[in-house]
Picture 1 (cartoon, protein in one colour):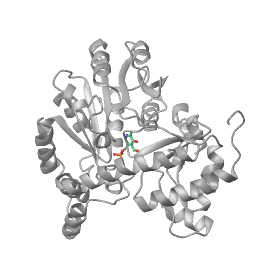
Picture 2: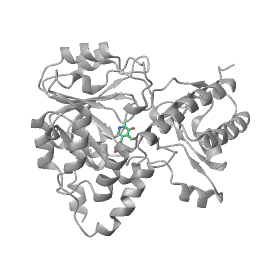
Picture 3: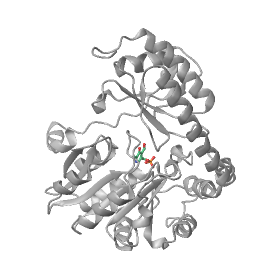
Picture 4: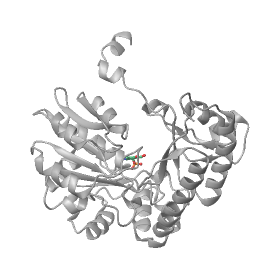
Length: 375
Ligand SMILES: Cc1ncc(COP(=O)(O)O)c(C=O)c1O
């Protein structure tokens, strides 16, 4: 056994497990509280699409069957919506799985991938698992530093990850900036445009939505998920839109039934449930304004966001604040481990949840001293 473990490469041993938001049940047991609310993982607090729930109930008696390995109907619906071919689509067990496919296909020892810091942690993790090197470029003015990313490209670069909107900043890349960036890149690499929060981008925003570049650039992959706006995080389903040739490679590396039956059926129903999506977006946009105003009144700094979460500079130690909020039954994310010791990230919940958040937050910040140098 000892020898077996010694043989594991250092890049695997040094991986850090992904820090999930604390599950509600665990928190309630630990702190002896009830009715906690979770605003830590950017889920949809309005719940799943009711049509998806009904659809899933109806197929439970089919659970003894394998799902459709080609996800025919879901691909067909998505292809219609984006005006692409079904062969441009790959479905995954969450959009995370698409990141995994791309790393396994294109990255190995001696190759590298570029991502930003901070951005979604899974990119660098998947790159490390496949033995590649991560080149990590700090954000500039709270968004991707496209010029520095382009400079970091070399002949060994195979993937560039851009979460657009960015997690955790909530900022977007403008149309002109992405157009310029894509036009300058060599074609031995793929730009992954991760639009996990794309649905939440406010109308009228100058946002470089990937699909508008799809016909012009063959080397982009657009990632989307049902975990956020569609409220289906627990089903684990996401998709990628890409050139047929890249999709065919993903099809080779994926497991035969990687997307389960309830996920396929639920996603298809959610996609057609315009009402649920509209209510979700209206709630998020309205509550975002409400929450920002209240946070500002309390002397903290909310960041403008095009997602369903918001970064807040609390001017206080975020770790301490996180613990104090936990005791009041509210789970948020401390951004301490991302290198932002005074920042928290909070998901936009329902109006009731947000009121509870504000009430607890206003009580807690009175008890935690401001960091030195703050007025
Ligand atoms: C930027 C970003 N991309 C992808 C994902 C993963 O989504 P999925 O649940 O589809 O794997 C997340 C989840 O938090 C995210 O923040």
